[in-house]
Length: 135
Image 1: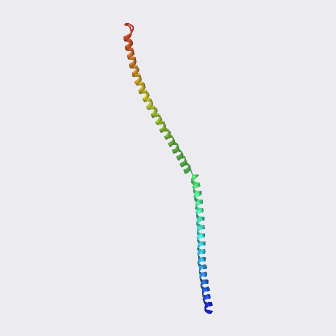
Image 2: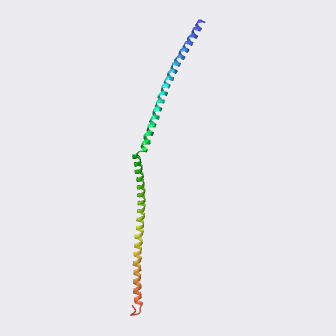
């Protein structure tokens, strides 16, 4: 019986030691978690401060004369690009109108030559058909 009691006491001591060791490991893990949490909170605060500084810097840049000059330059470039597109379109229309004008002039010239030939033929026919002395 003593032997059984000694064995139970030994088991109880082993369980108590294991529990104490586990508690120690959990305490260490909890302390490490607290340290990590504090570090992360400090990092978050640092990032928030950095974000505020960047916002302030950006706000200052957006209000600066250089940025306004840049915006004006970009707007002028866009306006010039628009005018260049309009000029290119107008040049295409001018070239097309010129081609039509040249074609119309050529057509009118060919018709004029034909009419002149027809008139010359009619004049010759009328001259031959007219009684002598009427021309």
